[in-house]
Length: 181
Image (tube, rainbow, N blue to C red):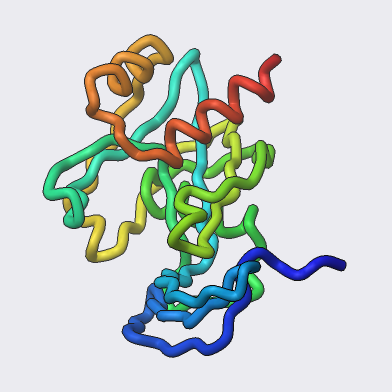
């Protein structure tokens, strides 16, 4: 087995909370030169595409880091960096928590990384169908969340208009299109 292109020499945690750890690693490259690498370690999350009647159920909320509201597919992870999470269980939890819907059928479409140059976090994408409405149970951070149904044509227009800017939502839609081929 060949040596990795970048090898970690030392590592130190520079910040952590219940959602993430930020660390700074001293690294060595193949040519022997050294440097530092900042890494955000976060647990994987689930993105759920709740689909029915030729469209999707979307959620919108204020996103503090970008200072604006955006629409996206329901998504999230458990707090406290919980390990041993079954991706489908997380997807079902996020769907119910954010929209109130329960899925009769959950199909895994794939696994992706959103920022593999800076973060270890990836995400599992699920298609939720045979939806049954119910009550949502949003977290305090989601108290301003809105929900609505959009047709596929509206969904594409929201991307074009810059209303949907979430990379995991757009990537999940791409996996759905590949699944439907």
